[in-house]
Amino acid sequence: MQKGISPEVKDSHDEYAEEYDSLAKQYEYHFQEIIFGLVFEYIDSGDKLLDLGIGTGLSSSLFKKAGLDIYGLDNSEIMLNICRKKNITRNLKLFDLKKGTLPYDDHLFDHVIAVGLLHFFEDLEMFFRESHRILKKRGTFSFTVQDSKTRISTTFDEEYEVLFCGHSDEYIEELIQKNNFKLLKRLKFLEFKDLSKKDYLHFKAYVLMKC
Ligand SMILES: C[S@@+](CC[C@H](N)C(=O)[O-])C[C@H]1O[C@@H](n2cnc3c(N)ncnc32)[C@H](O)[C@@H]1O
Image (cartoon, rainbow, N blue to C red; front, side):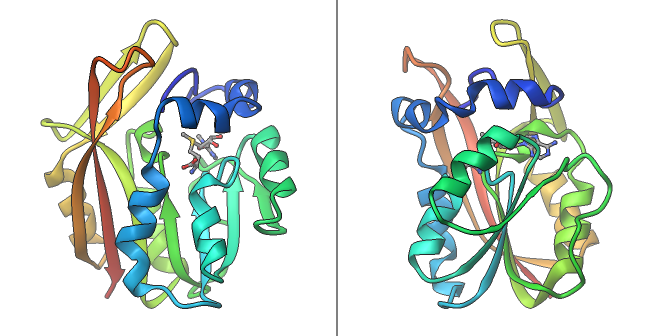
């Protein structure tokens, strides 16, 4: 689901926050179930999970239901306010992920997720380096990326004036190796491009383990 969410302009995230959950239904957005299903065998009730770009909490709600202790970051205050009302967690921070580090101590989390987020960023190095730092040993880092045949591709969506970034398997594999992760799972899936539902975008979900 990509309508109107800009990587650059914080106001834009705020602008669509109120209708985000309803748009997710209309787009038949299931990124959160895909990530939850793939990671399920590695989670335990009571584990600490950090959700990068938690939004309204869709990506964390199943983990909450499974008894995990949720932490979330987002740069949209309105998204965070909606998330807060769902009682998924009180550990929410207004934070811009374009900063070079994450505001947490080393080895704090059992799991880090980034669901429907990384296609707003060209360079993913920070996400791998920082997730590795804040994860416990054998912790998981799970995320979705828009698929790309070239290493990093960018597409400007004229209708919504948003830049979307795609990342190739090779690029992700380089980051996995460089940042000392092990690939556990990789799954390709499709997402409707717009509400006409005539065309699809290609995404991949990854589950990694910190070595
Ligand atoms: C498509 S939504 C996904 C939300 C949630 N993870 C889900 O699966 O429903 C992308 C989220 O990333 C957040 N986001 C985008 N760029 C960000 C940035 N630079 N810093 C923090 N959050 C950002 C947006 O505010 C939005 O909540």
